[in-house]
Image (cartoon, rainbow, N blue to C red; front, side):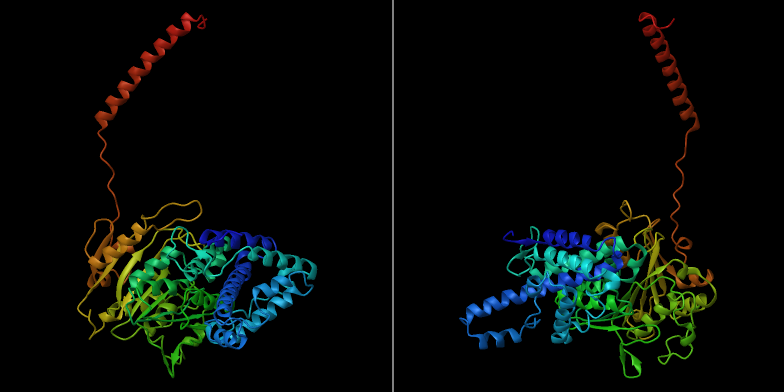
Length: 512
């Protein structure tokens, strides 16, 4: 084993370990096994190194060593480390042993990760096959991860030695989630927001030191982490809710690997049973960001009329499209006259009539909508369609710092992307252009425009971006006479070439 473990080493070995499961279960499921094992190997190796350091420091005084280790950020119970499992990798009940070790770890570190491993069953015959094949696969998984030395003193960034082991493992975890998103196809929407889309949302929302930041559809937590990075310090508080229990567990691990122990992440259905509450009221946040499922069917419209938090007072969205249900929740969860909301939506949200049109009209008349940003197509694994980002700003309410702002800023960034083989990419330059335009709020030809709310009203509260940003590029004028002269010249040249060719053929005796 090399003296140092780089980020590339972690990515390569962890991704290669996926071969254990390919063809057995799909990527949306085997991601859980790989990500849990990466976490498990890392915390085990941290524990091992810290134990060795304590043993040397206290010269083998086991009582003092144990006291020191009991105060570790993350505690590995006796017999539950990765090395303990490695020694038992040939056991007939290795799946059961892994589950027992993870249960013991989760119980000992409940305040840090809760029941994050609860839905990841390594002894599952349904997912991993009969005993013989399951044992073979799990032995292979253990041996793959044994190739990684993740002790903090051994882990370095690729060419960036200032990165800590925590930085590297956190980055590797995000990388794997991203790769699983590509492998999982449409199911990726359950757990992953593309990195650059997350960056757009985070930068648009612009969280500040001291802010409480929430994602009510947090998936694996990467968008929340991206928003936290925008703060520029550790002075923030993160909150989230996720309906998928397995994905919620991965989000808990993601937070830990990024050094965020205090995040409050709840498991449950945000629209029908919000968990981030303060008594009889929703908790309020400075920043609310989300990439909720697009046009969710059967989202719970039947419960909305009697919502105990009164969230749907502007109207109940149609039962087959939950987009405005998520938006409504996010607005209500933002602090009055202070909070900011950034949300990814399909374009239908901008112009669909009926119940959605009624709600859209209401929020525009309340002066809550600050910006509409059109993004390029094919950014997501879940859909090839272009999407938009809506920015709501409650500082525009009466009494807020931006109450005098009476326009909506439209940006058409749909043509700014780098084309990829399977998926388009937003580059940093594209994101920077969006953020710069939004900060200036000036008209930019064929790109952005500040539109008075009265004009939006005249258009029936339709937010379709081409109504406000003209991206039409006039065709280049063609000089027909000049084109004809070029054609004539080419024909003359062709006649001359044909004559020369006939002469050459005649000299060669090939023209009959």
